[in-house]
Image (cartoon, rainbow, N blue to C red; front, top):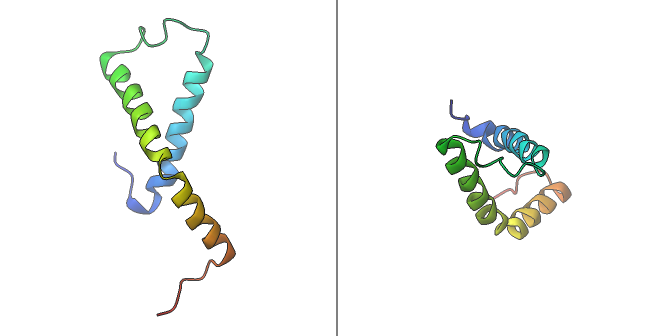
Length: 77
């Protein structure tokens, strides 16, 4: 079921954390990828691709987050 837009990032972060834990639990398992279904293999590699793209925006997102922490009130027009 797709996430509602108001909680999309929160839900996705939780799911991604579970995926990362699974990878970390299998760092010594050379058969980890081989034991997956084709859908899982495609999915994990898509996550890697998207994580790299998402990381390109780290400075922008961090700056906006810092600005929000300093002034959480919306700007008045």
